[in-house]
Amino acid sequence: MARRAVWLAILAAAILSRFSYLHVVWVEEGYPMAAAAEMLRGKTLYRDIWFDKPPLFAASYLLTGAAPGWPLRLFGAAFVLLAAWTAARAARAFGAAEREQLWAAGLTAFGFTFYVHSAALALTPDLLAVPLHFAAVAAAAAGNPFAAGLLCGVALCLNVKALFILAACALWQWRAPLRLLGGFALPALVCAAWLARAGALAACWEQVWLWGAAYAGEPLSSRPWLEFARRTLNWAGYHAAFCAAALYALWRERDWRRALWLLISLTAVALGMRFFPRYYFHLLPPVALLAARGFSMLPPRPALALALLLVIPAVRFGPRYLAVARGEPWADLAMFESSKQAAQALRAGSRAGQTLLVWGYRPELYVLSGMPAGTRFLDSQPLTGVLADRHLVSCRASLPEWAHRNRRELLRGPRPDWIADGLGPYNGALAMEKFLPEWMAGYEAAAEAPGYRLYRRRAAPVP
Image (cartoon, rainbow, N blue to C red; front, side, top):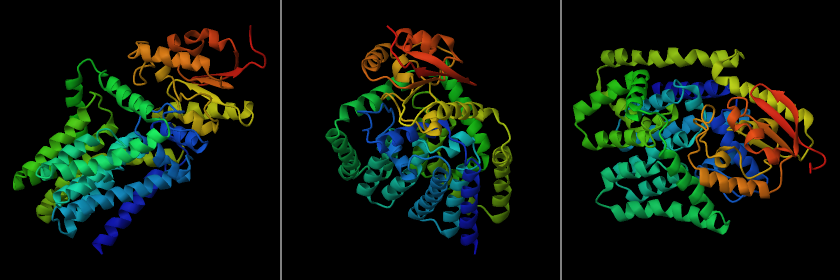
């Protein structure tokens, strides 16, 4: 009876939370959806589409038809169920009884629901790797190094931080490194062969790995370690019940492998010295399993008292679902609302088959407008060299030579029919008209929306 109640509660929370955002597209999911839509139009990732994330991230959105609305939210709800199920199976692999397995599943679903909404709802590489993280470490703990490595290899095609999952698996399978690494290499080699056949392997290396390394080498904060401590304490505060139960389990069992697993995952969070909320999902597997063990070891009354701490994130993040479902305005969705208005103007002014270039990092506009990309660049980062986490306020290019080369390619290629400048209204120095004035001579102002200037290609070229 308790088992059925837990899974029904997980299902209800997954559906209600995801469908509260039925008509919202987060920028973090707009990017892979725009890439997936181009793939459905026959383009090849990396070769024809600049994309700085691993290939399975964009490919996973093919499962929704790269469409917003109910397919996207149903996909998200199913993913929560998958993550909870793999958490329960991982607890079982560590010798847990049914009660502990249910705690693992429930805590995982809770972590995917009552946290920063943009981080918990958008299926980013950090979230998509969570079920594979659970499954890989469970396979390693169960004595199956090849399966553990195989799962880590699949995770690498979603998230480059899968290398840390491999390191965690090695804590249990350090005596079988060849089988662990053999399993890890197999998906990576298959993916590399597919990219090589499509003529996109070198481009993938450049866009995902070299660009990613340059991104990681540019910390956002001037005092990153202080920022790391602050953000981590914030996360621990919202997850106080998780952390207290996990520490209790560590204290009781003195399990050095799980303690090191926790430290490895925390290192993955700190990679690149950017501490966005979604990065902390790398901590969820070790913390959720340890917390489940702690709750199952505690007597009923102390366990219930500790579980009351879950009220903190539930009260903090729960009411927002109802507010968004009612259509109440929210500052976090202000840029999305401006993209909706820009998309409406584009649909009204464009003709079927016309193409679009979005200037800035506003990829949700491709999804909302339904217009195909007019160049292989889905945003302005590879063209300006200014990273999206700062380009609203800064003009300093982190990769100027690279951006200059990409601009030469842009100027040589076909021109899109429409340009939506979603950066210039916030940072005038990076406005499209100032950044590429000669190129923009072929366009005329067509409309404005909050946070956007829309340009249409002139019927006749300007001398």
